[in-house]
Image 1 (tube, rainbow, N blue to C red):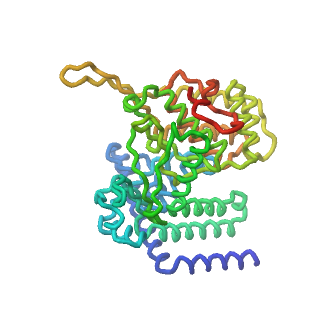
Image 2: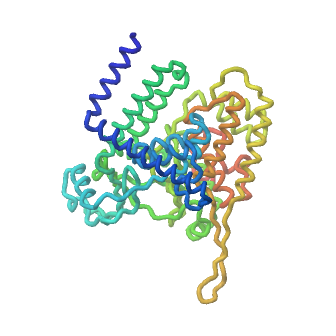
Length: 480
């Protein structure tokens, strides 16, 4: 009875906070989304049955994860973010759902310029012309939560970009996630066995994460803290982060230095700005590793679009909406894992991974070690996915060879699922933060196969792996 009364109180509190109008509106939208996807599924099945596999639409082979993905895409911002959380958390969710959520399209129609202008002026409390001498009305990029515009500051003439949150997104996220939390709590109440899965705790974690992502002041603080970390470690000569313009930023508007560069997977582009692509990669890798070891947080979304090589050869880390933190209790196991990996000791790797994760009982470390050997061989094989193209120069000029890495989210997620699946089969379940950490490490492993195929990061003395710096680091310590 007490549990039921407490749950009723929580549900009433959530309902009051969200409001009846929003709840009814989103319920109707959810019903229409489910209806539309059901029709798509029936059409796909009919097309497949009649031999029209090529016409089976976006769903392809109908499966529960695919159906859920389409529903989430139709419901928009909150549910796309929810799916992305699933894709980035293979230690929490079934593999087939993690893989399918990795296909989510975080794209949306751009908000009209006049709406963007009103949002910026309301947030900054000033007319647009007092802050910027120019703003491109066409967005540079747009997604479900925000869109980005090029601009020029009026006071200094500095070129910047403005990240503007779409109207109502924050409130919609709060309403939707509150509804999801209600469902989770009801399921746990009706099926007490579900409490062992920590379902409501996972939803609460998602809610906290998304609230942070919608507060651009926190992203701005992350960027400033990371810039300070670079300066204190003497790494600002090889890495950088966009400078935040605080006077033109708020909860829903983030103005920052515009950075022009080439993605870390564009070998030819990097050769145009760096004499030594391998050293550039080592700089990026060491900067990230040092942030894991020595900073309060690490960048938890280092896909190629968020790592740019600038004209001066420095590596720019951009988009700090998602960061990760490793608890002190995991440090020793992480260092032992890195040391074991550097000498190929799969038994010690198994011991370290078991120490990092939660276990329900004893772990057969010998069997776990054998499985780890198999995963490592799989990673080595996947790292050969490099696209090489011969491009003929204009007017009969000499041809050049361009290489790019197929380092998309799905490939990295597949590797991550192998690691997590191997651990779970051996009775080890990793915390989400370790999954985030491991995913970023796998991104860098893929970049190595393109920019420095002969680099052995676990043995190379330039790579600061598994060693906490004894004092302040300098670029010379790691890149020469």
